[in-house]
Image (cartoon, rainbow, N blue to C red; front, side, top):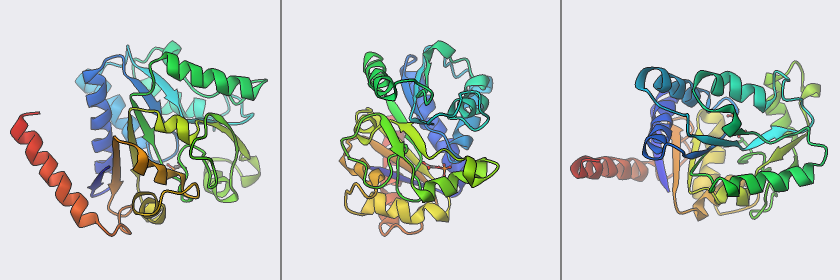
Length: 263
Ligand code: PGA
C-alpha cells in the first residue's frame, strides 16, 4: 500500500487527478470506478481542467459508480446521477453511453445488482477505483458489518451516515435510508484502488483502515488485502497515523527511483 500525504485538500486532489490522468493516457479505454461525496470534488474539478487545458481525452473511457441512493429519482438534485453529471461528466467528453451508475429505481433491485456486476465484468473489470471513506470506515456504502466478500446489493445506511449526508438535503428526514452499492468484494476486484481522505474528522477512520486490523467493522481496512492500493491523504486526515514518517520517506524514495528511471 502506498500512503501519500499531501499538505492540504488542493494538493491531495491534484495528486489523485494526476494518477487517474496517467491511467487514461496509458489506456485510453480505461474503466474507471468513480465515487461521490465532498472528497472527490477537487479531483473532478482538476480532471475537467485537464480535459480543457491539457487534452485529457475521455472519449474511450468507461465508468462505473460505486453507489446510488435507493428510490431517489436520477433527476433528483441530490442523486448521485445528478452529482456525477454536474461535477464531472458534463465537463468532459465521456460518452454518456459509457457511463454506469447503479439504478436505485430498478423495479427488481436484486436483478439489477446482478446485471451491474455482469456489466463490470463484461467491460473487463475496473482498472482504477476511486474511493472516499466514511467516518465509520465505510467504502461505497459498505457500512460496518458488511461482508468483506459482498457484491453489489441494497444496504441500510447507519444513523451516522444519514446524519453526515443530511448536509446535502433540506433536512435529515429527506436522506434516503437505503442505497445500492458495490460490495466490498466488488471493490476488491478492481485492478487498482485509489482512496482519498481529507480533514481531521476522517483521521480515526483512516488510522483504523490503514494501521488497524482487517475487520468488517471498518470495511476500508480490506484495502490491506489488495495488491495495488494508493491512499492519498491531506495532513489532517493523516494526523493519527503512527507511521507517517516512514510513508513520507517511502514516497521520497519512490520519486527518486522514478526520476532515475526516467518515468
Ligand atoms: P465524503 O464522503 O467524501 O462526503 O466525506 C465519503 C464517504 O462517505 O464515503
